[in-house]
Amino acid sequence: MWRLIFIGLLIWLIIHFARQYFRQQQNKTDTAPKTDELTEAMVKCEVCEIHLPRTEAYQHNNRYYCSQAHLPKKDV
Image (tube, rainbow, N blue to C red):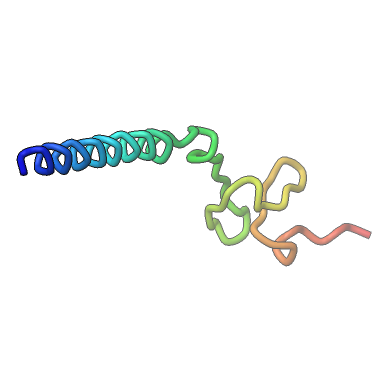
């Protein structure tokens, strides 16, 4: 009888420590985001003054715009 209890306890301990180990490994990869992914330069539209990421903005003469409608008209 004691032999079955000992084997059951041993199996439970192995499963418990294996779960704990895998949770720690998963948390290490999940909680370490790269700083490049978190930060992006924000710019302000010259017309409506809304802030948006630089990658989504339209640039003309070193000024940023939120849409093509806000871009200055070409002089003829």
